Structures are given as structure tokens and as C-alpha cells.
Length: 421
Image (cartoon, rainbow, N blue to C red; front, side, top):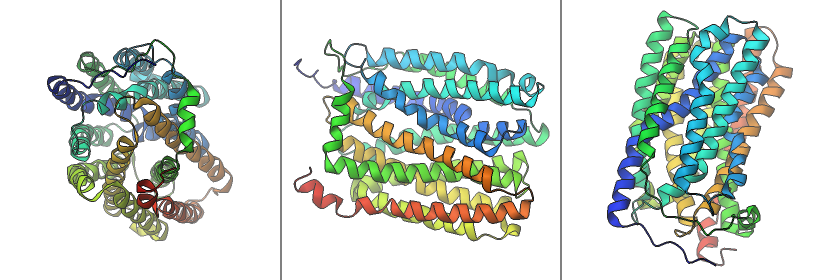
């Protein structure tokens, strides 16, 4: 066995943190623009079905499975080189969407298929790059400051995304259905990220041999990791599914315009931005497990409120508050998730644990929206009033599943400080 590489110097860790914080607003805004709410609205404008929308919503998560074969190269190839290659691939695959307005002029079936293919390939590239992104960050963290670091890192991204969505809302209000300039701006942000990540320092995990996938899968024997994965997979998959189909419901059943839905999206980003750094400090002090439990309970309650909301309440004001609250809770859940995963991952070789966590959580968050979309395609009637009734039942079921995400956290700390296996 090759001896682990020594930790990075204080100077390299500091440089890594600065470059990560500087590149995150461009990189993750690029990813969101091509994988999350904007593609959902774009596909709805093309006439895509619920199942097609659900499939698109799954891309950014289901393709996390590509991290397992990518992990095999971490022992032979620089993590920075893997990140750069995946990012350049994503940029190239996103280029057709810069010409979305021309695509929208084509027949519906062909336009939806081409857009779906491009969204899929961009998501695949982003997921491959994330194989090494978090292991790179793991080398920059100072002891006891994981929560604060990720609170600051994600606050920068949320600020950039908030500004993007404010501009998108103003643009779509004046130019309904014109998504090409928005995708072009997002592509420009991704291009700018290329120069920022090129100089990231790394703590090498290269041994000259390929990392075996079974080495990562063997970690499932660890009881604490299994419980962590159960909570994260269930909590994330329910929230992702709820956000995707809340947007579809608001457009098709509640009658909100594209710009009004983007207004609700702005509230969602603002909820994360307003609380991320605070959540980081709370997680560093109180621990990750209590925060995971509280935020899952809060999200379940929010889904119950959406299920019970009368039709007249589903305007911009109420839905913006709902998106804000869900994002606030998601921010805490996400910081606690990363904090706990970093505690469970060994500092000298974190890639196996981090990739396993991403794959399990990502597959769950990718498959559940597809299943939900297929079920809604069958269950939804043509009239908006009937569709709202179906959506209420749907969100009530999601609330129950989100509540179940709390169960694996019960007794977690006792197991962790006891046998642990």
C-alpha cells in the first residue's frame, strides 16, 4: 500500500479555500441554470409531459451513479484533471441550449427530445466533476469549521443565483418563452469557472492503481454510514421531487406565468442565502444530527401546508413564502449533510466515502421524480380543479415520506460513539 499523501500546507489550504469560494458562484450557478428550475420551465414551454419533466428533474441526481466508475481513476489521475475535463465536457454539451429559441421553433417532439439530450449530457458532466469536487474541498477544511466554511461557500453561490433569477424574472416578464439569453448567460458563467478551478491545489489520492468500486461499496457495512445514507437519500429525494412538481403545478394547475414562477424561485434562493452562514454556525455548535432531524420535520410540515392550501392561496405571495421556507430548511439540511459526511470520511482518502454518499443520495433523488412523473401522468385529469386535487394528495404523501427521513437519526449518536458497526 502506498503511504497517504501528507496534508496540504497552511498556505495551500488557504489558497484552496479562496479559489473554491471564488469559483463556486460561477460553477454552481452554471449547474443550476442547466439542471434545475429553468430547464423545468423551458420544457413546460415546449409542451413536455409530466413524465418528461420528471425525467429531466432526475438528470442532475441519477447521473451521480457515474461517480462510481469515475472513482476508479482517482488512484491514477489528478483530481483537478478529472474536474477540468468534466467541466469542459459540460460546457460543450450546453452549447445547443444557447440557441433554445431556434430549438423551440421546431416540431414539439423533436424539440423536447433535443433539449432533453442536451440537459442530460450537461448533468452527466457535472456529476462526473463532483466525484472529485468534495474530496478536493475536504483537504482545505480547518478542524471545527466545516459548517462555517460551507455556509460561506454556499452563500456566495446563492447570491449569484439570486441575482441571476432576478434578471431572469425581469426578462421573462417582457419576453415570455425566450430562454436562449438566459442559457447563454449561464454558459458564460460556466466558461469563467474554467480559469478559477485550473489552479486548485489537491491532496493526492493517487496510488498508481485504480480504486476498486467494491472498496466503496464495502463501506455499506458501517452501521452509522447506512443510517446517514437512509436519512439523506429519503430527505433529498422527497424535497427534489416536491420542488420539481410544485413548479409544474403552479404553471399548469394554478395558472401562474413563467415570470411569476421565477419570482417564487427567487424566494427559494433567498431563503438559502439568508440562513446558510447561520446554519453553518449552528451545525458546528449543535452537531449535524439534530439539525438533520429538525429540518426534515420542518420540510414535512411545509409539504402538509402545500397539500392543504386552497386554490385561491396559490398566488405569487403565498407560494413565494412557501419556497422561501423550504429553501431555509434545505439550507440547514444540506450543511448538516456535508458536515456529517466529512466527519465520516477519513481525511487521508475521503473519495470513497464521499462518492458513495453522493451516489446513494443522487440515485434516490433521481429515480423518485421519474416515478412521481409517471404516476402523475396516469392520475392527472385534464381540468385544473381536478389536477389540484391530485396534487394535494401527492404532496401529502411526500410529507409522510419526509417525516420518515427522521427515523434513521434516532439513536445515531449512541451507535456512533458505541460500536459504530
